[in-house]
Image (tube, rainbow over all chains, first blue to last red; front, top):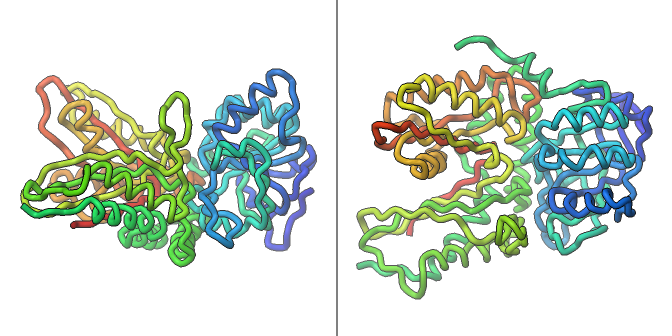
Length: 192
Length: 280
């Protein structure tokens, strides 16, 4: 579900539909409320053989959002420690297959491959950027956390987060828009 | 001969690990303020402000500034009149890292082998570079080096004919290719000269200098300023969303060089430049 708040920021709650995705454009500021699943390098390494064999995954990715992060441990009494995004590009080889299964968005930082950008277009999905290195601030938007799979991976386990107003920005949309390219062009100054 | 017991070393390293990850150094906070005065991009302004707030929150709540609490890199200056007692210096540093990362609720990010990828669980071992120095003190300069930006670090062996111009072009190319991935605003540590490995170590060591301070070599200082200006003209901006603040600083260290060689290494550091030092 998606709606635009009075302050112009788009509010998104998974599960997301094709129509929701079509309404998101590169550069849009977005607040997410609802469930995010965390997965990064090692978790993707375990999901991929399952996908290749056509076996069920420990999470149903249809309509969902995967957040590339490996949080620091929570202090006693806290929900989570620091929880900022990790580099999305390292997951590029896995991402198109997940979008094919119905995953609607990923959250990371840094650029994605052309194959991922093509998959966003083909399967109607988006890539969100969260602020890299702002893990302390981002932890404040996480209200609940549980481990869903691969607990032995520690920080790389798949976690289910319940978030409220988690702030992201659309980096790559399903129309070919790319915030990184547009932003750089707008502020590049010629000169030696 | 002055004696320093390993327990004092471990305690000091433990404290450095926790403080480095929760208390961003004043030179970094000043860099955010300087950038907020000049950044034209509204998105860039917003990112810089959030990162400043993030530093404040990390400090007051004692949670890490970034969830990637880094690979501990220690530059040690061991006075030649110091005798470390009670055990090994490196074991003491690793004991401090282990205690600091466990007790400080910092993320364990180190795997015991690049191939089997099993996490060591306490962020050990550290990477330790040791210089022997005159005197009777032990100085430890510690960095909690983030992985995302480290992955964008580069090395190139240029030919002497490529010269200074070649070095400049390649450094700017490193900033361009690091782009949004390395969490700009960036700090670049550049090592030029020496051999293959000296250049890389110098590039990391260059990051230890206080951000915003002039290079003690006036020629290199001019070069650093020129390169910083060029980096910030690329337009990448905070987080790569576009803007004027792509880098906070470029620090260069050099070493004498073989007549055939012009090695250049660039360590890319993100805005989570966590560094602390102690002298025992």
